[in-house]
Amino acid sequence: MPRVVKEENFAAKRKEILDVVRKLVYTKGYEAMSIQDILDEMKISKGAFYHYFDSKQSLLDGLVEKMLEESDQVMSPILEAADLSALEKMKQYFDTGSRWKIDQKPFILNLMRIWYDDSNSLIRHKHEAAFMKHFSPKLAKIIHQGIDEGVFSTRYPEQFADTMLGLSRGLEGNIVGLLLADHPPPDALEKLELVVGSYYESLERILGAPAGSLWTGTMDILREWISPSS
Image (tube, rainbow, N blue to C red; front, side, top):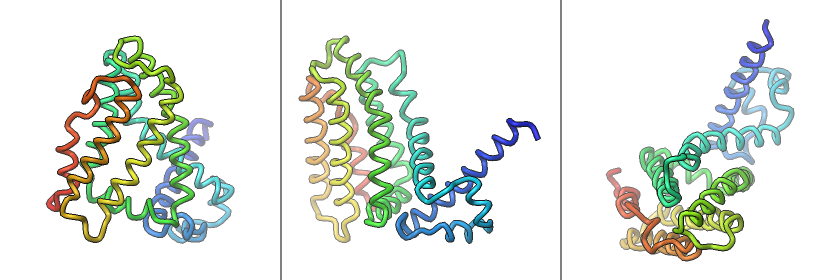
């Protein structure tokens, strides 16, 4: 068998295993999942499994890498577009991520319930660290572009790129707490608006961007999250 075919088959089988792992992470949690669960799900031997992954840790690394690649496919074309201004890139970065999530709202809400469970704390933190390492340089490049275009004025582009992603993790945690509450407060939309508004205002002030320049169309998306009919 030609080498390239072997490599393609190997990659395809790894992907198949990782798809099963992701399913088990979402149903059982990473900590509770065992390699035997994977073997039972795929009807393969332990020897066959270890041909592709040598440990549960390597599974974790592979799954995090796969999730990062999926995020990159959505976000990098925006972040690296040569014909967009820095403000347009930032706005599309936020809007595309938000719209992608709302377009599959039931799945995302169910995923959040599992993703933020203690049983997935390790994989969640590992993914967040990998996401920051990968996307921070891309965001720093946009901040430099904004400085050159005269719309940003921060003196710390690289450092603020890290800060921006860190703030987004905190924002997501606050939003998840409201969305997954057993009994959402009647003023949930107002609370969401305050949380999201403070995030964007912080970004704009630290970047030195015009007030309101990054927060566009967000209220419509927040209403969709709160709406029980969505």
